[in-house]
Structure formats: C-alpha cells, structure tokens
Amino acid sequence: MVRPAFAGSFYMSESFDLIVIGAGPGGYVCAIRAAQLGMKVACVEKRATLGGTCLNVGCIPSKALLHSSEHFEETKHKLADHGVIVEGVKIDLARMQARKGEVVSANVKGVEFLFKKNKVTWLKGEASIPAPGQVKVGETTYAAKNIVIATGSESMPLAGVEVDEKQIVTSTGALELEKVPGHLVVIGGGVIGLELGSVWRRLGAEVTVVEFLDRLVPTMDAELGKQFERVLAKQGIKFKLKSKVTAAQKGKDGVTLTIEPAAGGAAETVKADVVLLAIGRRAYTAGLGLAEIGVATDARGRVVTDAHFATNVPGIYAIGDAIAGAMLAHKAEEEGVAAAEILAGQHGHVNYNAIPGVVYTWPEVASIGETEEQLKARGAAYSVGKFPFTANGRARAMGDVDGFVKILADKTTDRILGAHILGADAGTLIAEIAVAMEFGASAEDVARTSHAHPSLNEAVKEAALAVGGRALHI
Ligand SMILES: Cc1cc2nc3c(=O)[nH]c(=O)nc-3n(C[C@H](O)[C@H](O)[C@H](O)COP(=O)(O)OP(=O)(O)OC[C@H]3O[C@@H](n4cnc5c(N)ncnc54)[C@H](O)[C@@H]3O)c2cc1C
Image 1 (cartoon, rainbow, N blue to C red):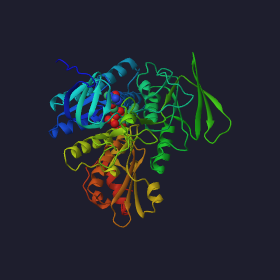
Image 2: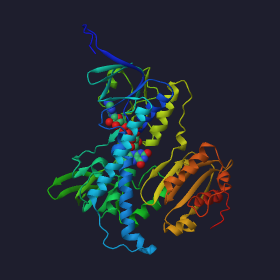
Image 3: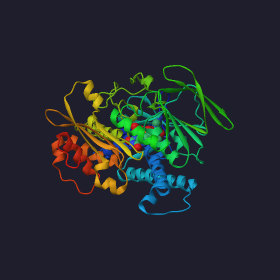
Image 4: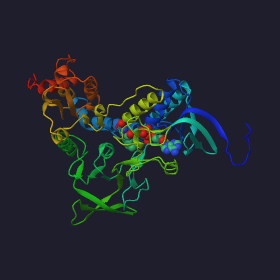
C-alpha cells in the first residue's frame, strides 16, 4: 500500500469499531466478546504472545509449578500413609520447568486460535493513544471508534531492594529459578508470595516470609487467616510478621537483608540465597500517553473510570488490573465482557460482591463476599455457620482434614453475605457459593440442596446448616 504523503498530516491505516490495548484476560476476553457482538475489533499486545500476565507469567505458570511441586510433596511425604511406597523420589527441575513452559505455550496459542476464530486482529507492538479515536502501534496509526485500555499491572518495587530477576526476583523470576534455593526469603505475605513460597518450600528450600502487617493476606477473614498461618507454619514456612525489609545487599554467596520491626527498633540481618519481592502489584499504563490526552489516573496510577468503565475522555474505557479493584484474572474478564456489552448498547454489569478470591496453596483458601470484620465494621446483624473438614467423610478419606467452611448470612433474611473456606479444593468449592450469591440465595437454600456423598461440598452444606444451628454431622 502506498502512503499518501502530504505535509502536516499522518497516515491513518485501517479503522476499527474497537481497539483493545493489552491481551491479558481482561483485554483478550473484551476483544472476543466485542467481536461476538458484531464489532470490528483489534487487540494490541507488545508481548510476543497473547494472554497477558495471567497466562505468561502469572496464574497459569504458577499453578503449573504449584501442581508439580504438590505431586513431589505428596509422593515424598504423604503417599506412604496411603500404603503407596515410592523409593528414591527425586526432582527433575529442568523437566518441571519445561512442562510449565509447555502448559503456558498451549494456553497462549489457545488465545491466538480464539482471535482467529472470532476474527479479532492482533496488532503486534506497543500501543500509544496520540489522540482520542486513535491508537498508534509502531509507525502506524489506526482509527478506533472506541478504545479499551487493558494494560494490566506490574510488580511493585521496594526502595533498597533492587530486582535483578536472579538473586532478587519478582514473581516472574521466581517462576524461572533453575536451582532450588537453600534459603528463599519472601518479602510480602500476600497471595503471590505465599503461593510461590509454597512451591519452593515443597521442592526443598527453607522459606521465610517477611510481612509488614501482623497477619497474612490482610483482606482475608481474620479467623481463617490465623488458621491459614498455622497450617503454613506446620508445613515449615517461617514467618516474620510486623517486620520490614529496609535494605538488601547482594554478594557472591547470596543476599543480606536488613530487617527491622515495622514499628521501628533494632535491625537484624538475614542471609538469603534468593529474595522474592512480592509486596503487591501496581497498575501499568506507561507509554500510553494518558497524561497528554488528559485521561485521569488516581494517586496509585490506576485509570479512573465510572461504573461503565468509561474514563473522563469520551471513547476511552479501561478495565482489569489497570483500574481500581481486586487484581484478579476473572475480575478483569468479567469487566472485559461487561465493557464490550456496554459498547454494544447492552447492559453489561459486574457484581463485585460475588467475585471469589483464591490462594492456591495446599490446603487452598477461598473467599467471597464480606468478611466477619467487614460485617462488624458496618454494624450488620449476621449469623455464622462453620463446619470443619475433620468432620467431612471425603476429607478424611483423602487425608486432607485441615481447615473449615465458614458461611456468613444476614440475621434477619438469611441471605448469604460471605463465605470463607480453608481446605482441600477450596477454590473449586467456593463456586457453589458464588452461584448462590448471584441468585440471592439464603443459607437455608444451600442447606436444603442435595449434595453428593461423600464429597467435600458436603462441608459447605453443613456450614449452611450450621447458620441455622442445625448441622447434622458435628
Ligand atoms: C505470579 C502471579 C500469579 C497470579 N495468579 C493469579 C491467580 O491464580 N488467579 C487470578 O485470578 N489472578 C492471578 N494473578 C493476577 C492476574 O494475573 C491479573 O489479575 C490479570 O492478569 C490481570 O489481567 P489484565 O488483562 O488486566 O492485565 P494483564 O494480564 O497484566 O495483561 C496486560 C497486557 O497488556 C500488555 N500491554 C501493556 N501495555 C501495553 C501497550 N502499551 N501496548 C501493548 N500491550 C501492552 C502487557 O504486555 C500485557 O500482556 C496472578 C498474578 C501473578 C503475577
């Protein structure tokens, strides 16, 4: 194609109904849904593969390593109890990492296939927004009736702790280690730190988690959090709560960390072979040119949107980790779908109160809705139903009796307000409560539903029965 060359103008290539910037779970799902609804859609991605943080360096590779390392731990420490004797159990870390790569590759290619199937154009390169209605990729500027920013997030830096992705790593480096570290210090007791800490602990590392607050995963229901901490400590993870890392000195034989009490006081030094910096993630919008076109961001760098994902600039929308709210793949996805539907004139909507959050350790932790602390803070009258996995036949048969199910319901209407589960497969069990909450169900609705026996889900039913003070098996 010959470019028309006339002074003072620029070459405008193809035009689209929608250009989505970023092909993570928010962006690629938004692009697919918009294409399903009949829009001409392009999605820009600067990474060599589609799928964003989640598929490339987040959810999927971490779950692959969690699963592999759990197999190792099970074979080494748990199978004998089941009468299965395996001798000479060893790790082939190179194979484990290669398998993880294969899993990632299959997933990202899957998104490429979905783009082709739905006729979404993948524009390869880094996008900027020179003006509303325009997206520039490389030297080409495309016209877009609407633009959705889905550029995701990046690991939060910490002063004094310089990441090199070898000795001091973010989650990305922690997924790529070629050797099991002797001592791994994790800075941050959040979801990512605990999941990756678990991986390397299972594979043989001594793991210490340093956390500024007095508890792990601070958004978690406190009762559940306490028990979760005890379970992880029993597995061998050491915790330094109410502590902060103030410096990291790299040497040939590891990293020396300076750690102080969070409230101030005498410092101590701790040696680590590898340090994982996992104090959180922050919205990523670098290079888009948002300030230049006047798109508002908040003090934490997140794009400010209204309830319909619209920014303050007409025609520009934002979703996922780049905006406020939980940094979760399925939250980004729901927003992607809702944004596409709104652009198509439909009534896309996300129920933020029914988005589950899962920590994929073993046992898993899963939460949805309000915590007991949140209910107390807003002065709500509520009932609590709890049921331990020690009293669940299937959990006993599996040998996985740690944890419990806790359901919180409105005292007057019995409507489920929240549920918190620590236990085997908690991440799958929580789906039942998510559906119940979407339907505005009461605890009694769940309690009167037949649950297969013997199943872990029976613990959910029993917790629902316990809300009404009538659990049967305890
Ligand atoms: C180790 C780890 C484990 C996780 N595990 C889970 C989990 O188990 N469950 C869960 O729900 N969440 C998990 N998350 C969080 C999850 O990955 C994010 O919430 C999710 O990926 C956010 O999706 P997104 O589409 O908003 O952004 P992202 O997935 O971050 O995708 C954004 C994409 O935009 C691209 N991009 C950025 N700027 C530009 C530009 N200017 N031009 C072109 N492309 C651009 C980036 O390259 C990236 O591919 C995990 C995260 C990490 C780091």
